[in-house]
Amino acid sequence: MTAARVGGSVGWATIALLSVGVGGYAIFLTVTGFQYLGLKNNFPSPLVFHTHIAASGVAMVLGPFQFLKALRTGQPAIHRWMGRVYVAACVVGGLAGGSIALFSTSGLPAGLGFLLLAVLWVPFTLLAWTSAMNRNFIVHERWMIRSFALTFAAVTLRIYLPAAVIANHGAFPVPAYQVIAWICWVPNLIVAEIWIRSRPGLRLRRKVAAAPA
Image (cartoon, rainbow, N blue to C red; front, side, top):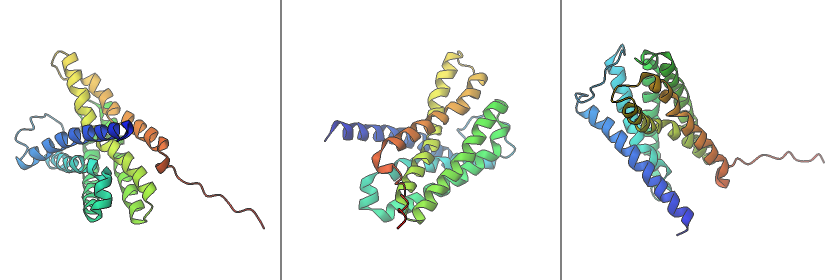
């Protein structure tokens, strides 16, 4: 096994572990009736917030496994069904999250960051789905990478936020959270785009017009 394949396997395993951990906790909150949530907010509807947590948790758990080549080629039916559930979870989670984003207790900058995340997350995921339905699998994979980069914002947010709380001596850091609402997903999307453009198998083939006879 080459160093590149080892690095890719370790990278995927790390992403999968973090995703399943964060997504699994969201599912735990869901099945326990959110009694351990302990989060103050100004959201007009707890149901919408809980729907966002539940759906996003499912997307987090399923997302990494959509990139497993062994699953795609060895168990295509499972891959397709997991993909359908992932798409539904992203759409429901994104719509629910977007509808409450501007009610963030950290103010408009944070709310706008989360709103734009939702605005991109839903269509990117739907584009991944429609391209698969059209059997354009290169385009499908490109959009899936972008979609999961946004899904992974749930992980990066939970990396940045504890560090900001510690730096703020244990108090919730509102100014830092306004920044985190953006940096939890914008760098993810940039890295995803660099990855897409660096992979020969993901480059779109340009159609060359035939010369006139």
